[in-house]
Length: 220
Ligand code: TYD
Image 1 (tube, helix red, strand yellow):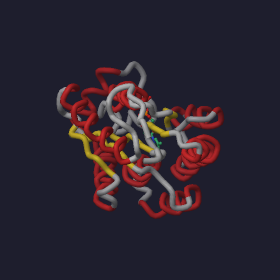
Image 2 (cartoon, rainbow, N blue to C red; image 1 turned 135 degrees about the vertical axis):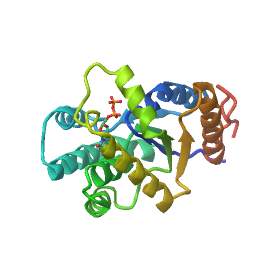
Image 3 (cartoon, rainbow, N blue to C red; image 1 turned 90 degrees about the horizontal axis):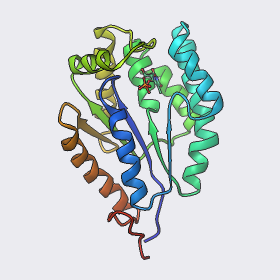
């Protein structure tokens, strides 16, 4: 079976714990023989990282915020993600367009329609093959966030109602496209979450022609 590329995104509220699992996911995929681009949004390119600084710390109008998210995304998508997928690499991206639906569309109450227009314009019908949504109740996300942080950014400083709307908007995304999403109950112990993630990654690997045994190249 010919091997093929896969675009995986990670989503969830700030404090859901996604960053705890990223190095483990990267390692698991690389050990299965995947040539992996691991990246993040906003960011992922020199321009995108500059925009990230502004987005996280500079007060701005909501439309400006949304446009800058997509400006960073367009640069990232066209210059890094799409070329990588076309070369057959896998891409693991910490947040992508679902975050714009959740945070700008939901949290900031912009609504989904403008985000959908920008998504269509930038991505032209292409997007992630699989999205892992790290889902936790609001109280747990906030508790983890305040424990781990010295200085909160513009999003992390938002109130509980903002994050409730954000979480609901994530769930609306899942309801609209259930086959793309895997909702991970991120309240559990790290080992239990990893066991579930391992199963999901094995399925993705298998479907794209990769053996799942660590370090074993596919003989075909
Ligand atoms: P995050 O990636 O969680 O970084 P860290 O773990 O270093 O804090 O933070 C990025 C923030 O950007 C997060 O609060 C969500 C927000 N965001 C949006 O509001 N819209 C988007 O489209 C994206 C990609 C991120």
